[in-house]
Image (cartoon, rainbow, N blue to C red; front, side, top):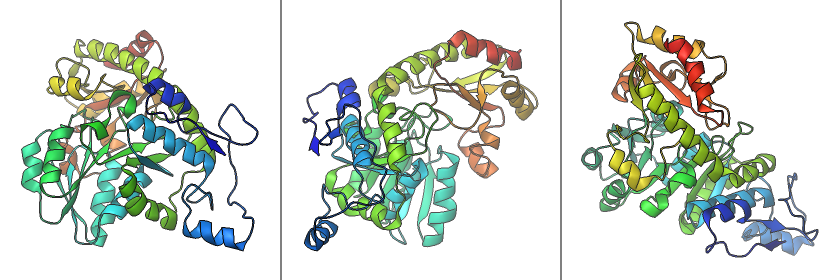
Amino acid sequence: MTSSPNPDDWDFDTRAVRAGTRRTEFNEHGEALFLTSSFTFENAAEAAERFANSGDHFVYSRFSNPTVSMFQDRLAALEGGEACIATASGMSAIFTTCLGLLNAGDHVVASRSLFGATVQLFNTILARFGVETTYVDATDPAAWAAAMRSTTRILFVETPSNPTAEIADIAALKAVASARGALLVVDNCFCTPALQRPLALGADVVIHSATKYLDGQGRVIGGAIVGDKTLIADRLAPVLRTAGPSLSPFNAWILLKGLETLSLRMERQSSNALVLARWLEAHPAVERVLFPGLESHPQADLVRRQQSAGGAVVSFVVKGDDARAAAWRVVDGCALISRTANLGDTRSTITHPATTTHGRVSPEARAAAGIGEGLVRVAVGLENPDDVMNDLARGLG
């Protein structure tokens, strides 16, 4: 197989379509889908050499497959990273990162505003193996610095956060991490490299749930980790090879096609989300809107420095004496918007985080993260925003 030219000088949109492409001797125009579990060798000596030094050679699809490699190379090019490994899901990307970077007795500092499953991973699984996590305000670098210990190995943050749209100052957190020899890990799921590039702002590792915007159409599950070549090869790839949280070649092929339209989708969905957020902000039944694209966002200046747009996720707090009932009326009133906890789709989705994505998080932790019973999250798709607003209006009326 021959590789495509070096994409370093290409524009983002060109890299999204062409970076990482490998062609076989048939010179196919589209990316080839390699549905094979293993690869053959000319002789025993070649097999021994490739198992010992796999490099760019393909040995076994648990850890090396041409279609998966194309996805990895393309995403690394988009994020501005040296290397990428793909995983079976976004959560397996986080778990692989933790297994590769942490030992028993290590300490993690993380934002209070995290996806519910990530909190469960830190609190119930990693804690069993002697890894302790301290949660702090994502927006306060001083709080991160105060929580650091001699055993702190990673700082973990989502920015924007799910679902409260808090923005962490990536450069400031990198300074905190570097001062104590720790690594900064940033979940870039909500923005994707189309809107934000954490590595350029100082992050050491970027994590994706490729299930979301990288696919963009709700078709497959996948995850990815991007960083420098040495860290990926020495610390994280061995976990993937041995533990096997592997991305399937078929899912990688779907994700490659998703990346081709990433920039277009994120631009339009961010624009649609801004229209919806402004409408909600003026609605008498809405107490507060949480969206990075609004001028009213408490960190609007930081948003402008870090992101090229606000993203496509709009959260809002519904007024009402019975907050949960008021929020559920909005969710249940939708006939167009899909009631599902997934996001990143071309179709708008709606959920009540306190009883779905964060339902297993303790009430105290939810309250500390600002996830109240009146909070509703809408991931805005490609529909006409007027139709989305009309759909929400029934439950808000």
